[in-house]
Length: 91
Image (cartoon, rainbow, N blue to C red):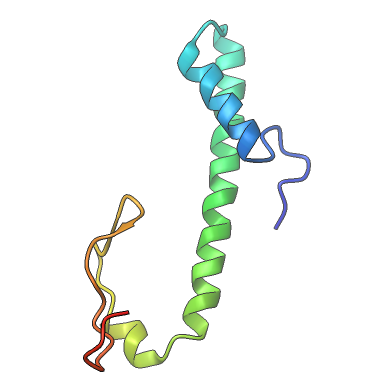
């Protein structure tokens, strides 16, 4: 996966793009161009995280993969409950 060739191609670019959107002062066309570039970057970032989680889950025992995680465990990126690994220990 790469960000090569994208208008917003890294975290610093994303921060500057976001700042220009919230600061205002852009004409409508420029606002739409920056917004699309930022959404494209965020989409690529999200896809990279999905691929990472898929790869990590390949190494997770099947029992834990299917029974230990439930929808809603992750709320805004913060883990909302301790997992039960079935051996009586928290990790």
